[in-house]
Every structure is written in C-alpha cells, then in structure tokens.
Image 1 (cartoon, rainbow, N blue to C red):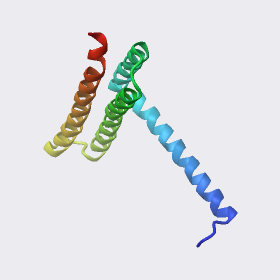
Image 2: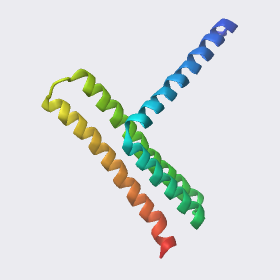
Image 3: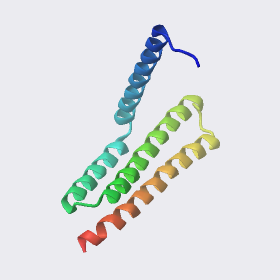
Length: 127
C-alpha cells in the first residue's frame, strides 16, 4: 500500500483547486456566450417555483432536477463543441455544419425529454 506524503497531498489539493478554478471560468464563458443558457435557467427557476407551489414529491423533485440538469449540461456541451468547431474550421465545411447541428439536436432532445418530464409531473397537480 502506498502512503501519500504531505508534499503529494498538497500537490493533489492544489491541482484540485485549479480544476475548480478552470471549471468556474468555463461556467462564466458558458453563461456569457450562450443566451439560451439564460432562457433555460429561467425555465428551470419557474419549474422550481411550481415544484414548491404544488409541493411535489421527492421522486418528482429528483426527476425535475435531473431533467433540467440534462438540458443545461447538453447546452454547455453544445457551446463547447461550437467554440471548438469555430476554432478548428475557420471556413465553411459541411462536416463542421453537421457537427454543430448534431450538437444542437442533442440539446433539442434533452429539452424535449425535460418538457415531457415536466408535463408528467405538473399536469396532475394543475388539473
């Protein structure tokens, strides 16, 4: 069994702290460059408000948060892919277009799933 000495522990902690710093920067870039992210966050906040209003069950909360997180995560991946394609394909290329369209399609799939989950949760409460 290997023992981790203090220098190694400090290195691991420093490396972990830096990765959180980079992830935070990534979130800033995402929110700054992606108007749809703000729309999705607003819809998520509305869904949270409805969840509190109707006092949804624990499993419904889990489903709601998971579905909303799926949409926001898909949008973040879409943004990362678009940034990369814009960097690596300065001129028009059909594969670059296809890549961007498929990534956007993934967001649409995630949003569709989230809408279905939201309807399954809230329609019984509303009616």
